[in-house]
Amino acid sequence: MEIRSRVRIGKIPIDAVTMKDAVQQVYRHLASDKASRFIVSGVNAHFINTAQNEARFASYLSDSNLNVADGESLVLASRLMGLHLPQRVTGIDLMIELCGMAATSDRSVYLLGGKPGAAEKAANQLCGWFPKLKIVGVDRPPFGRESDPMIVEAIRSRIRDARPDLLFVCFGVPHQEYWIQAHALDLPVRVVMGNGAAFDVLAGYFHRPPKWMQCAGLEWLYRFCAEPFRLWKRYLVGNLQFVGTVMQQQYEMRQRIL
Image (tube, rainbow, N blue to C red; front, side):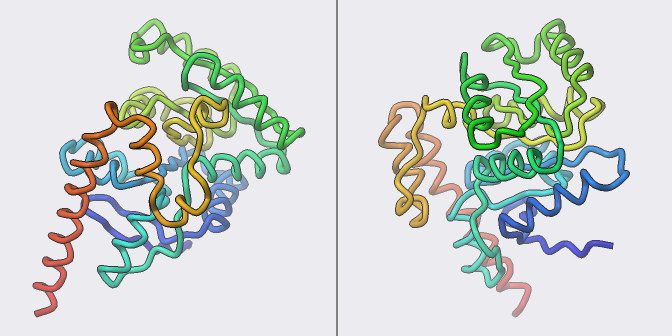
């Protein structure tokens, strides 16, 4: 039986894994005869904040099979509390690595969501990197109609026909998680992962910051400067909320020791 090492930040358990570990866990599930869905989530400070306020979201992440630390702030917070997350594992990079694994192990992929045309461009980018990758579906519901019963059933029907090994869903947080919870867990799919704006980034609609900013944990600042009016509350208010959650948890841990 696999022994899992998890670190809890706020209400969310984060798996203490490297990128290699995360890919191996997904590969082992695909290679097994388990019929259950393997849910993967890339967790950042925004996830922690959302989970503090939304019990349904917290429950989804608590039940997720693999939660990776998609944020340098989580790695730093774990170390401040004397815990250990070995490294940041971004959701978009994990998705790329999983597509590479799928290409070499004859597994299929389905892309759902993103801005208009983003999933198609992301598929072209991924197939350029991994010529043997089998993308068996590229799909996107009309904006704002992700939960429309007729639209949902049409998408589910196409996924059932395609029977992908891996399904990547990009509706944004927490909409993608709620969509997966409500509509994807009974589909013939082995692995499901919510990926935020990953398709949009791969399509070139958004640009990632320079590597030095990513390593320094300043990706949030880059994104805030790019879209200040849309993201000011998430980052300026959200960062303070995240720090408060970590400080409260650190205080409670110390009180238990005393």
